[in-house]
Length: 415
Image 1: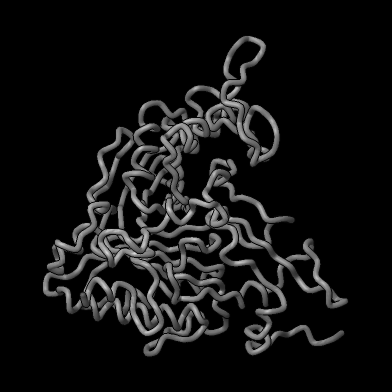
Image 2 (image 1 turned 180 degrees about the vertical axis):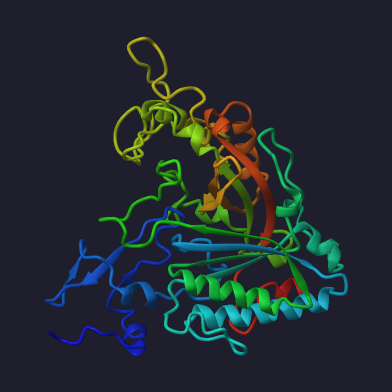
């Protein structure tokens, strides 16, 4: 038998041989995995090699920050910070400079410049992304109120909200994703450690998705209700994708050019109640088949639903309050957002009820034209509402990507 061991040098050197197609799937959670066969060819059915999983690298510098159109990773951390009382604009700039330098190194599979914990020592970059954003209060704490975007005004109240203020909002927000749990945790610890003395943790949440290569073919992800989730996500290939998701170069304020706005909601799923429903009743709540995500009116996952189709009794096949009907852009004046969530499970409460659900993250050029109109529509009669509870919320301005030699937010903080 030949030696089956894989050295770190070999692991990091096989990125061109096998891999995951980055940047092609938007937020649809689809992975295109090809593994080398014994004859040197590739097989779409062979399980993904560890060399593929570890060697995939996402670039830190670019027009947009990573972690927005990057395919969803298997492990994620969300963390929000508040600046300490003694910290202002200068300290915030120094922190973003450190964070950006560290993110660039870690995303390349390198150790932190100092005090590295060695948690990810044996792994490649594993599709790590680190994304930074600013909350509403950041601008008053740094004396930059005049640079605060109008789109960052606080979200309105919704009837489904049961928000914990201690786990909502924040001055600074960081999203971390990776296809290896230790790589993701390594980045989380680096970010937290470098904030010491400047910003303190306000809240932190952990999430997960299906691992790349876990299915026989690339698929849209399922959520903890067992439903395929993300079918109607905008795709980078759409003609109006950039217009919907990213702030244009001519946008106001100018420092947000190429950036986006992230709405973050911790949505608890009432799984005990949901799982009491029959599969048919679950499908009627969503408006899609549970097996393949196809609309109840037939076809495949991407088939356009026939919203006016009725059954033999004259009832709508897709109920009037079905989630898939209410959230469609053509039912909301064209409102659209790029959903890129993580699932979460934080144990059980005192009654044995699972504390589990969705770390909902959506991206849009303007939340008043993306998230807000859709959530208002859901508030007025979504069948899914009785099975979920919005427990925390945040809205963050995520600047465009940092050009080489700059740090994220530099054009705001050094204007």
